[in-house]
Length: 639
Image (cartoon, rainbow, N blue to C red):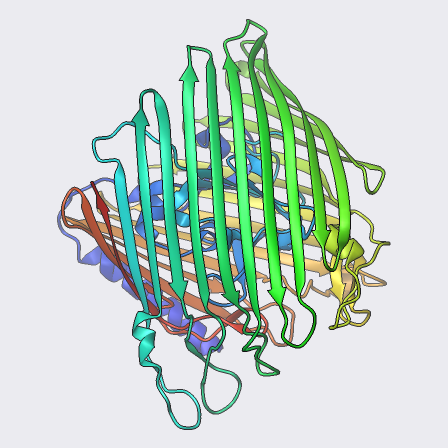
């Protein structure tokens, strides 16, 4: 495996060099925009010391990825867990912290619920996304809170005036029909394994900015995989059928009022293939329903001191139904809502503060959890203080919430600073404290047929993290380096001996992120990043000298990409190396992806994307093999 990983990295370097060497004509100047790189949040619509990676719409269109989790994975410091192919549940890990320790927002509204404490990003269609901000420490541009493991804010598209408001995107995905089984069978339907369509309308109608979309997906996910025997197996009962739709509308009323509403709906029917090689579940399936509505009214230019007021009214309903042919069916109904009022105060040319209150609730009616309710009122404030004529800025924040079911207060706070050394060169630092209460499933899950049960004695997770970073841009080179540390108390993990979640006493993470981008010319750009993340499991009597690592954390992660454009073509070759974890079954992983776009006319774009170019055999979740090489052909027409 080691030789294979080294060989794959050599291939990536060679291909990147070849792409750069074969271009001799200057055409467009957007290649640099197609490279994922870490940026200060001051460049992401706020002046904040948080460490943030911003994934733009231009990058989304260039990569042509299938899922939102794959997009987030382009950022340094992130990777994702996936239970297999297209449509399978996908959650994101930031700097080694499990997905339950991160918060997911949609247009600034929290999606993470108290039911399971995680968000399956497969429910959010890529076609609806304008950009993504991955906040790895501090409050980011959200300002209201921070999290032990970081936050992700997904910003959706808004309508704007255009003469061609309609857009249709279609795609077919193919696996090569490889031999499987003792008879060397081949599944020729692999050539038409998945189909996807998205129809979007975006325009301004009589002063209302409107963006509406509807889409669907069908996939059998019938790919071959290595099941540990001498012959390959065909993935069975992994199919997905889904349909989604959404409307995002906003309108200015006069000069000082703006109203907006964003509604999203998604339905999924998923086969559940189970874990190999123990068993397959040919008759099991799962249905997921999501309905989410976010509504905002903003008042601006109110006065000299209280300048802006924003109110939000949000509600989310989700249902998961699971049919288990060998046990009992289960249904989980999840309700989440909140009302928020926020004000911005200008206290001088160099000072401003934002204060707010948020009244949130979670209500679950679940076969396994029962009926549980959590009322979660909170107050918060964050400020920006500019000193030394703006050379130095400080960014404190604080949040205090009350959890009704635990009858406890839950605080979090952060303090950040930015020091400008010169144009495009800054030092930044922040430190934060956050708490993560156990979710309903961890607390109250009733003993099921597999022996799993909740633990009502779980304690709240608590974490302290800090980082120090330096970034500069000396055209054509951009560089950002960060050192970070994270200290987590009472971390909740699954105890396989007791078959229930438990708190471990202590875990510590120390690491660094290094990212560099190079714009060779107007056509070619290169990007590379590296994450070193050393973890210590200090549970029980473990100490630093024992050097026991957290089993799920990869110590080394590297990512690279090369993008180029010539006449009507642009392409991105991207790759990542995921090092082993301390788990004995863990393997290092190398994955390459290629995307090539052709702008045939002003209104028609076609593309070919090859996922897992080297046809690597790997897993991101044990027992759920990821697909091999997949070729996707698609196109987008505007009219």
